Image 1 (cartoon, rainbow, N blue to C red):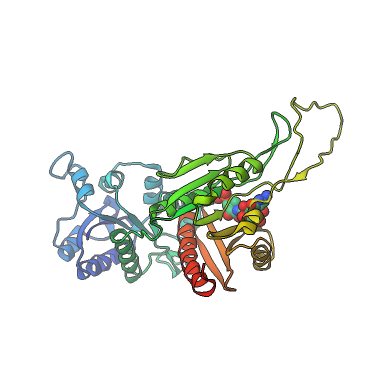
Image 2: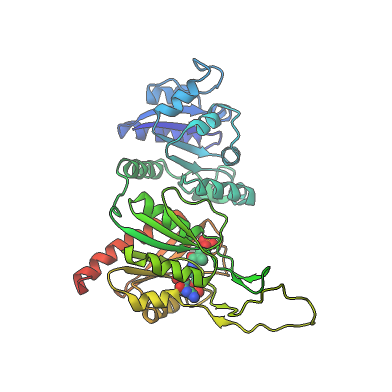
Length: 403
Ligand code: PMT
């Protein structure tokens, strides 16, 4: 593969020479690009000798005004190691003031970043916000290691070992060479986002669901070849490419659309945070502030998941559980009471995960009795992991009960 190895200006730049050597050994063609700061730590000649190619260091010293576009187009993978705090900030915000950042914007293939910096810089909210932006953009992050840092401090921030970065590169190469199409021919019905239950023409009850988890599931299923029907509550997310989005507002509307599309579906995933209660009779006019206190009498909304569980025939049913405590027990209880095949449990409220976040950490509770902990990762990666396990589970259930 043609790899563009971009070296940022940190003391860890010397380790990138070893990375370049490993990549060459693995048979890749490696084009190195360095920032001016990187040149302060390692001379371009080192990389030129290791890769057999002239190193790109200056946007204005390349052969033509558009050579950086050609370089970006002819390479298949961009690896940024070390990715310094400054570089991550520039990439997150789309600045393009040197050869490396310009190539980044012109590059359209997969991007892998290996950050390295002082522990305080790594943990600073600005760096973490930039990291979240880059993760959301779909880039692979090879997390820095923890230990003694060149600055004399101890903690996370050390560039991952070149062997670890090379292994992550191999995994990225593998997945881009063989994109998974294991949901081809399937129809996946997914619900996402909150529902809004009106109290009058201007007020409603809702919850914090952003729709990110459900949309990530829709994107993953689509990328793996499925036809995807996404029944979505009100969210501020762009419709995923190639997905049929059915917009709804209330739990009742969501139920209606889910039941309407159910006959086509082989896999149903209920990631939506459906309101549990609503006002059965919504006043036609705005409620006036005439009393000091008012009470609301709410009725339960239709439990869509439970209804799907009762109907279950040929489709595989995945529910979600958003819990603030006793995640595993509650997930198992929901699996049994709603007749699901899998429940994806996430802890909400106590940490920064679950609602609204770009990342999540879940526990999968399976009908087979198995429980699988999926560690913190982007919601897109969690979505892929859910589909991996759904496909395995379907095979296991097929073998035991013929489904
Ligand atoms: O949207 P994000 O910001 O990305 O956040 C993701 C998430 C936290 C919303 C998601 O990961 C999640 O946990 N979704 C389910 C939230 C929820 O409503 O949990 P619950 O434990 O109240 O409901 C259990 C299951 O029953 C869910 O599959 C839900 O869709 C379903 N349900 C609930 C009530 C109802 N009336 N009908 C239902 O179908």
